[in-house]
Amino acid sequence: MKKAILVVTMLTSSIFISCSSDDDNADPVVGKWQQIEISDGSDATACIFEETLEFTSDGRLVRTEFQSTSANETDNCDQETTTTFEWSFVATNTYEIRSGANITTVAIFVIDGRLTLRTSEIFIPENSEFSQITKTYKGI
Image 1 (cartoon, rainbow, N blue to C red):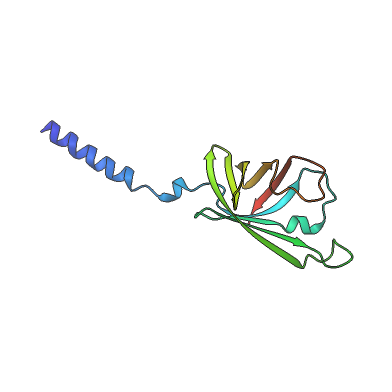
Image 2: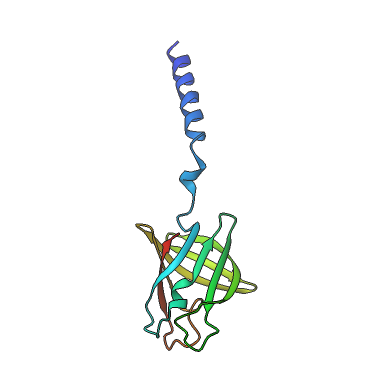
């Protein structure tokens, strides 16, 4: 009788464990993020802080950048450019971002609703003199 109770208890426990929410396994980068800081010291215009990253649960990363078409670059961020990448988890705080055959390893930290991205290749502005950059985004 004791063995039967033990078997029933184990089966019941395994059912509850296997039925836990899939949300518990969601990667913290999944979501939409808007840039709020950049480390490279470049002349940051308002348009830079309109940039968004959207990490989807199916492994897509959509980056949306904005530029001004007016002479005064801080007033009007009316030109939108969207680029789609693929992303995958490699290890704690380490991700790969792919664009065609190009693969870049990126450090990403999500702490207190902020995503911090550190990279030496991808997402570095063209006019930057730095070879590595840190960008911080807030969840939106």
